[in-house]
Amino acid sequence: MLVSRMVRVLGMTVVSGVLISAAGVASADAAIKIDGSSTMYPITEAVVKNFQTTQKDPIKVAVGVSGTSGGFMKFCRGEIDIVNASRPIQGKEMKACNKASVEYVELPIAFDAITVAVNPKNDWIKTMTLAELKKMWEPAAQGKITKWSQINPAWPDEAFKLYGAGANSGTYDYFTQAVIGKAKSIRGDFTASEDDNVLVRGVASDKNALGFFGFGYYVENQDKVRAVAIDDGSGEGINPSVETVEDGSYRPLSRPIFIYVNMKKAEKPVGRDFVTFYIKNASALVRGARYFPLPPRAYRADMEFFKMKRLGTVFDGFLPVGITIDDLLRREARFYEN
Image 1: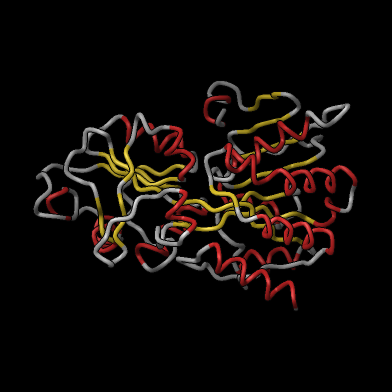
Image 2 (image 1 turned 30 degrees about the vertical axis):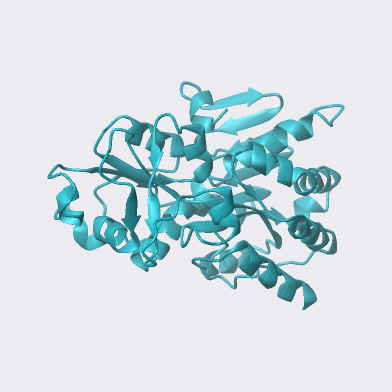
């Protein structure tokens, strides 16, 4: 059950002790406040629901969806306890957290494959190169590159319509860095939203639409949209899948996704119990949310990081592109050893 389906009329809805807010407004009396990435939302929602079944008296957990950047803004002001993040924390966010004395532990939870999708009636695109994607999405294309034939002469001389993540989304940051070569550098004439469901509906409703969003949202809507294979320059189009994410061949659009935990909350019993439950059950619940679990040793490392309060990030404020699961584990191992 995704957030847009629940809060279309009401600003907030309580389900089994879970307060879910479309605007990312954290309930003042919630025991645990979470906000951030729509990509991570289905995983965290599943964790919260399953955690509640272990509680004699269900606690109130507020889960908002304001995008990764929006979530970090609140997290670094101390307004929420956990941020769902579809990219690592950035340098300016690290500085903001440090200024507010917010100490945190970074916990990788899963891998995602940003999926480029078209309408099922689109019968001319099976594969796109990174060069074609850049030509379509770069800032210089705004108002000038508007038809499929301008991207590839073999494609129809018809106008396309674009859908993509909003500026507060970690998916927006990662996609622009991976495809354009510079984060947040993108044409402005496209339909943007931090809610992936809006993007899916847009692509599903128009034969000439193309969009990008998290893999879980694609899998949930395979009857409405079709994934495009990505050619990173090797000459071979690679579709997003369990196999291509695990072996690192779906690049550069596969990426790790995280939760960041405020250690002040984690030191309290309710926070400690929730995060411990999250890590212990992550593999099964990630798979259930249609994302890619990390190897068991990664979750063991998460648990050690959490118990030992190993603060900070293994990414030093930078946004890595094309990182594989093995790359992530090597970074974590080096950080852990130090």
